[in-house]
Length: 519
Ligand code: ADP
Ligand code: ZN
Image (cartoon, rainbow, N blue to C red; front, top):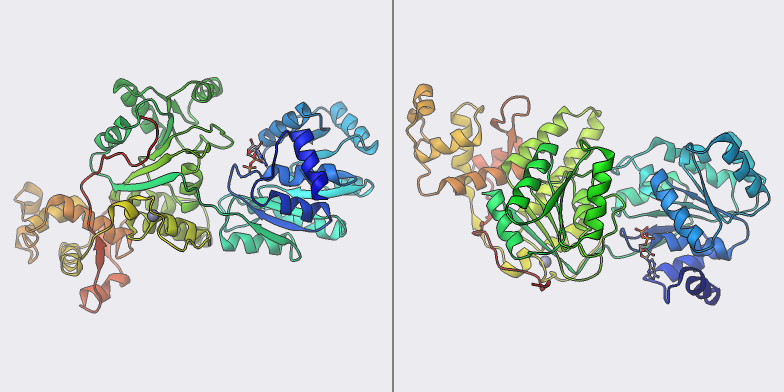
């Protein structure tokens, strides 16, 4: 069987060897077994069903949520001489009838379908009259409500187990955490599926997360060591994307904006330039990235915090697809935390949904404030255990010093409490530093017991302390108002002297080059 698979790999696809688990997965499915495949983006999931599709008799049905992805795959297969079609709503009735006819004559090996289309009773009945070789369910995490991409129509794919009990099914995803995995198994009835877990580690990516001080200056310092490299800079808002693209270009780093507010033509043009020209920086909102396969992206930089580790992993994962050294760099600050918490608070979803999102944001914040190896923490989130610190992230390379912040944290919390739990960090820091200004005096805050108590620390140190308190959930941000800070139940132990607090000591911004990428 594997011999035959090898031959197809070589003759049809032109590749010499299987990558990672591909061989084992193909063997499993081609011999009629179910499989659950977790593989990072770019790992080579498509071959895992395309090769068995050619090895088995009958039609392989591939479920995919995005028409664009289906069309890409069909076009590629076409070029390789494999008969594949995508049935979707953009086809005319005649075209659809024609495809149905060819399916009946068994002239087609792979049929790509959206899930809602597949589960239509007429479609299921039609397929039941055909010999079916296998079902592949791509982007299977869409079945999970825990996942970031839940699509209700995926839930109905569970029926396939009943309708086609003897047809092997394989589910594929690049989203790896355990909860998502269990939901896929349960909802798609893949209890008998063999699980193939690939490592999600991207060893050539160097991770660095720095506290945001003067973001433009920090970014320029980072870029100045990467002149001529192609990279992606992610920003949260369209306006910031436009501003940063103009700013970078002005500073001698040619950059292009990409966001949903630009016309389709301009977006396509920028994307094309980014793919074809050397050394361009794409400044983008998260709208950019799906299906972007540029191998030599040397860095991914974030000036705003992604809202989950899944998003961070996906976005940074666009760097270094060629396996050469690449950087993931992010500057993050208290404003990011406040902004994301506000967004979450104002979002539509129900309580359960908000709790999930909150949990994800907390995991993202924890990575930023982390004192251990970033890679161990990141992979750990996806249930992958890295035995040793990686030696290839800022925490590993620079070392993280921690300090006992118990006493200053109490003072910081006390400043929140004494001033009435309604002021933002700027004012709180003024109180601690004993600054004499209009606002302080008009509020009579110079009489507070904490006034001027914190002079042994700098403004920056107090700001960083507040950021870490909020990130660790020891203080809350007023999300309806202007971002004033409040105490919560978690900080009581600290205030009562029953708990202590170790924080990371912030390092002055490092500009030394961390990877060996070409100068
Ligand atoms: P995924 O769906 O997991 O993101 P793809 O199936 O699109 O990944 O594959 C990513 C790239 O890797 C494609 O360009 C594909 O042709 C290539 N590829 C996959 N498997 C192999 C292999 N065994 N040898 C060489 N290239 C491969
Ligand atoms: Zn590390």
